[in-house]
Amino acid sequence: MEACKIRNLFNLNETIAVRLFDGAEYPWEVLPKIGAFIVELGQTLSEEEYEKRGENVWIAKSATVAPTAYINGPAIIGKDAQVRHCAFIRGNAIVGEGAVVGNSTELKNVVLFNKVQVPHYNYVGDSILGYKAHMGAGSITSNVKSDKTLVVVKDEKERIETGLKKFGAMLGDEVEVGCGSVLNPGTVVGPHTNIYPLSSVREVVPADSIYKKRGEVAQKH
Image (cartoon, rainbow, N blue to C red; front, top):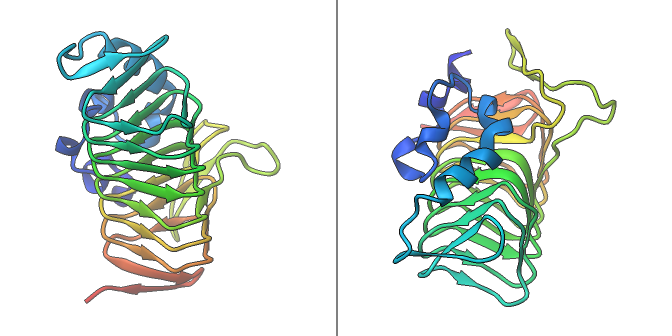
């Protein structure tokens, strides 16, 4: 399933977590490793650029963090990032440079590449969002199946057993997710793709496309 491979989804030059992906073929393989990776990486960050606050929380001195935001470690908040009013970062979170974590947004076990925006009432769990990916207001990742079985990644022809109970979404670089959308467990969206508002997505969506609804996906021209 070529579309789901790390090299076809992300520009790894746009994340401080580039070494997290070493040896992995598909991005969801790194989900169980995020917490330990943050602890290891945080200890190497420059004290001139990052301040350690509490246990295993490193925040860039150029980042803006609202006093009402809650950040639980392990976590790294990158340079020039914004963590806004009442954001809830539950742990195992890397927020990239220039990224925005907005009002009442909740993060858990995620990597946000540089300049990702999750700016309004988003839940992002067990997910990886590529460079400049944007989730519209109220859009969320659903990271556990209702029957609690392990997540399978599917496209029209192939299936990949992930072995994971918790798996939200993998969004390629510059993906735009419309307001109020739900990205169901095992969703993978290729780079430069747009998801219509109020969509329910549960499959592999090709790069450079427009997702209107299930079975109706148009290629961009």
